[in-house]
Figure 1 (cartoon, one colour):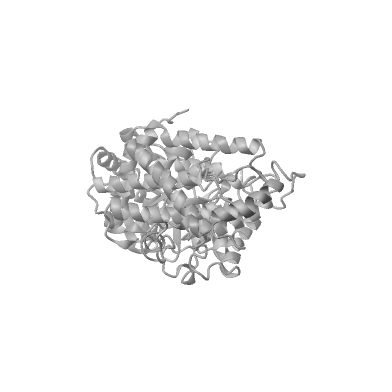
Figure 2 (figure 1 turned 90 degrees about the horizontal axis):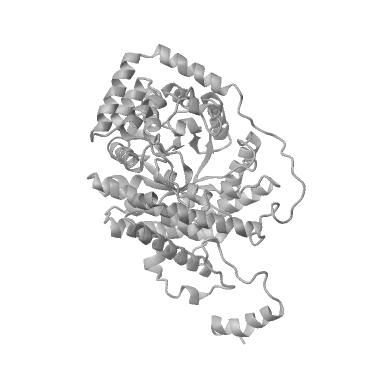
Length: 551
């Protein structure tokens, strides 16, 4: 006879079988510590109310997607993150990617650019163009986007501490191309809080950094209405080792801090909230990731509607970019990474992402080759146009397992947000080291499981074979640093240096007061002041942050 309940099935069917043939392990759980049952059924989602917790796509609380027809209307933006060497090399890569069917640009900047040093600074030695493109002045930006009309592409820039400067360069470049700021589309990461938590490319202390962020909110709300003024990032925290639930909780807590800071600066929440976007990791535990995205979307909708009393539906929507997990890529058996990336990309799609970057299989070694990035782009195109997963909205919705896991991850994330609130908010919690310690503990637990063989990684601690050889490689040319220094010296000789001094002085005065810092930064950029010169002025006013160390 068929079982009448899950308990009856467990007692009469499952348990006797397990006594005879034990399962592979004593306990199954995901990265967030959720113990996984063998089977999920209606009993596991009996408390879920469809209209209140799921609803229909395009309607609050947006669990099932922010657009009514999702990918039936338009495929997610295929946005590969790219940048290396000097602006010329990266410009060539952008034209190549657009030619392969990429639909948006995503700029990777080198470390000196990220932390506000010119290529001729002593601290930049050996790092110029290595992990991204080197940008010292507006001239580099002009070369970077040569032949690319800014009114025809959407550009994402992964830049945080120097976000104001790079955004100013993009706006000025648009003006030089004859494109009004109001017509520019794109996103600037502009999320400095996660830098203190997990990534480290900060310059100034948290509170003046928050001012720069909210200055961008205010300026763009009035002048660049189609620009996403922040991409609140959980990606880097996940790469540092946090769990899926922590990624939701810590990311949304940072989002709360930014929204509150803007409101404290007397901005109307509905004037800027629709342009707040997010950036998440898609890791290799497939169903946990699908549930994570759905839980984050539902939780943010409630935060914006109930906590901040936003009135516009667009203010409630969590729109996000996804990148597949860099930390899941292995140097051992690197072609396995193609499969990992495909699974992670599929999870992001089933979770409802708005844009997607798929990692290249050779990234554990070096900057991706053209062969590798082409496979990464083709992975998205195969999923979009051959798999059928884009033909139905939220195809994972209604799964007993997915809905149960979505609810559990939402609960855990809510608990993290409540804890951060109790500490005084995200900034104060960072200053006390709360998020950093939590991530350290989660990372240590995961690494211990790998080393003990409890967490299997194919080709690393199981199914190990000899090393695979990669056919093609890409190396950043050794002359990039010298080339950048020469270009920088030429700019400094030929520009109007009196004008540069005048604009930098004006920036210093504004930074010392309460005016918006973006207009004087734009004036500096127009005069071809360098990123190092602009940031040195801000360092002199705001000070420099030293690392928060917590154990």
